[in-house]
Length: 592
Image 1 (spheres, one colour):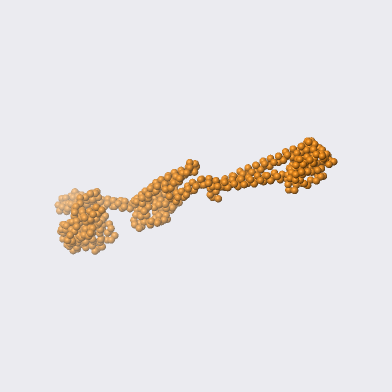
Image 2 (image 1 turned 45 degrees about the vertical axis):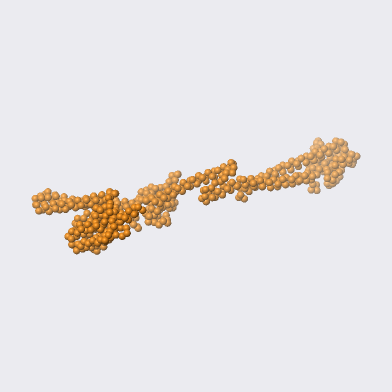
């Protein structure tokens, strides 16, 4: 029986039944005692009346027995006993006591014999023929039927009492059944007033567990059930607000983790992967469904338990596959309120570009130092030679001074290129206007035509009929063209060709410088736009190059929002090209 409604009804019914049983037992016992006492009093009154009125003689006894009711077949019995406690004569219903029958074994008679000084009455019970009798013995005197009377023995059947008690018991039973029926009806009604609000609260709690927080319970009363409903409504409201706040915070946290530039990985104390954001997956080159084992294998820091013991820590991780990557890993423990470690968070910071820039910075410093040291060493050695006496030899002194002058020019070009790069790095806003690359290319070709003729090179320019303008700084784009064409002339052997081409498409104006020179090895091609990088360092230095021309060109084109590239095959020549957005296309993109 799981319903509290029926439990309440059953409890009430059991209480009523128990109360009625107790009341019935008590009343039946009381009524039984009452009727037995009444019979005792009636028997004693009859016995004393016979004894005290000297009616115990042959002449008066029959009439007296009739008057006192001893001749009724349903009434009392009167037995006169002699001194030996044997029946002399009996009046009333025949119960098997014959003249001469000994009644010593009957308790009242036995008590009378055992206590000769007491007159009685002595009371007891007597069973005969399935009927229970109330018996009483009273000491008396007299003479009847030729024998002396020793005692009066009276019997009163209790069947009438028990009949009355059975009737009363039936009445109580009927009252009990009626009370049970009434209690069931009233109990169900009463229990319903209790269980209905509880069932409503239970139903709403199930909805709450299913995720529906827009619910409330009607407060029907101001008792404990009503208070429970109020508390439930308050709990629902607070839970709704808390979950909304948690959802907002979770959304913010997920957005932060999803779009932050650092990778975040979280493990719990059991080594389970709790969270990994997209940046971490990208940095580790892992699929979106990566498992904890795959992440641990990629980190190569041991098992999850090892990572828990490493925290807190600051580590550097280097990966070569699928690409060279340098990551800085910060391991931070997650602590509970009881200061127990419940997990670890690994924050990954991509240091690849920073590492590359640091290496470039170191290489730049080393290259600058090397590039400056060489001419300075030459200048110092020649000057020392002149100071040691060579200045007296005019021809030798002039030759030495010529070398010093050349090395000084070389340092001046190097410093100038370095200043140009520094200016490009720091200059955020440049003055730009419409520049026609076909006109600019023609101007540069004319300027460098003499240098090409000196090396017996065929310098050709190919221009379309109309080229749209680009939005650029004229001097900087001119410097790009000069650097690229000059390199083509320098590294193309005598008799070769240099072709300068300009063409336009819907978005960009592209310039190509193609030569038939010595070409660039495939392994060096990705690095030719790095500062101070030379494919053939000795030959480049002999030609007066600083190793910064293409780096300057790369810096200028990228600052203009363009693209520069190189294509080459060793011994087959090189193509250096760059493209810039058309001025109209740039303006439309800006408006969008």
